[in-house]
Image (cartoon, rainbow, N blue to C red; front, side, top):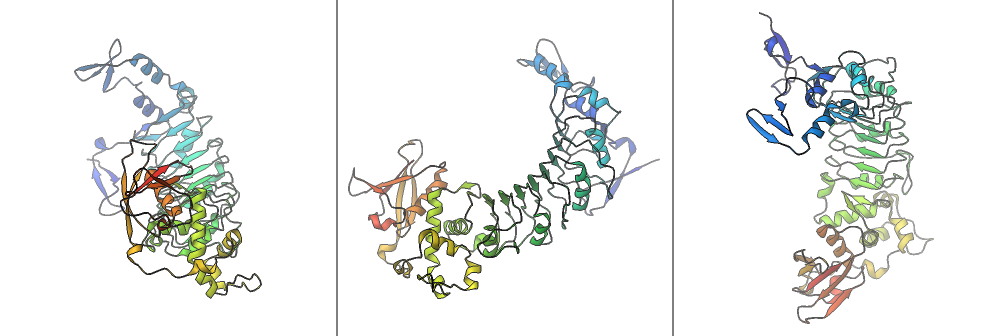
Length: 479
């Protein structure tokens, strides 16, 4: 009796398998058969259409409003623009030109999690789709070209391509990329890519690259893809990198690497040093950063302080961990940074007299933005740099009730805040607490002892204690 050997993923051994009978094996179907099955065109269906807008499930008849029009629309495959046959056991293209005759207007195809074993099969399908713009072939274990082959025109209009979990290597990506002249978004998550190569004369139109869940050898691998001219978004989540460095630019200068990069995701990595955050200020176009779940995020006990430090270190950043950075929040972060490290600046050779101001290289390496902050706001005054006062009864936490008068449906929130917390930092906390869109906050408070009297908190740089706020008072938030 004949048997068929199939490999099963997820077993005790990565290349393990088991013997099964041929009549129990699924050898897959052609693309068009899968489309017809998915969109209700084959004769054998679990769901049979009845009359007068009814559909029969086994012995039960269910009536649907507009069922005739929906069914008719699905039957007109030549009008469908977006087709999904995910997990439909597609293994081959089928008869030549059959797809182009039946689905003439397809532009977006989801072929993920099927039985496609070769990139050539993908080409066979795509070559019959004249205006293909989006293609997802993720979760197919495929064989890709290992040498440069003749370039197919099948992907001449392709803009978005997903190859997640396909076991493709970066070398194979570059070989195939010769046939992707218009590609803008490339998703390569979970492919065990560890080594990158310089993309010569390919991927010039790429705007988004997702390398998440690939364990790169080190952050220097990024230098090899740093000159993609149009790359705007780079996703490096869970790639194992522990540092970022742009050696072509010195303190306070901009790198020529990643010239168009606006959005960077480095969350879930091993970055533990502030030097990597300093390096990100060298990126000339960076506007959005995701960096959660790195050891660096545990270096400060107060999450608010950590956020303020990142904002102050990266001058052009507008969004941090999906939260908008408002101008007032940036100003407060930069002023605090200038004050917090003022004594270090003086000890390292900084001075109020420009002719005597010569901070050490070590200080500039740790705080490359400090000189520009002094130019922006002026050098910190001596009174600002006095050590913090010891904790006294006047410097305890305040228990405050926070209300939004303009949103009565928003329940009051009770928060404990230190008296020394500036109004600017309070605003930063409230932006995230109430998820307030980009706008200017106006704060005031009502004293528990003077009913009906409202005091405006109008100076962002003053601490709460400046306004004689006490525990039990109510802070009012308007925008």
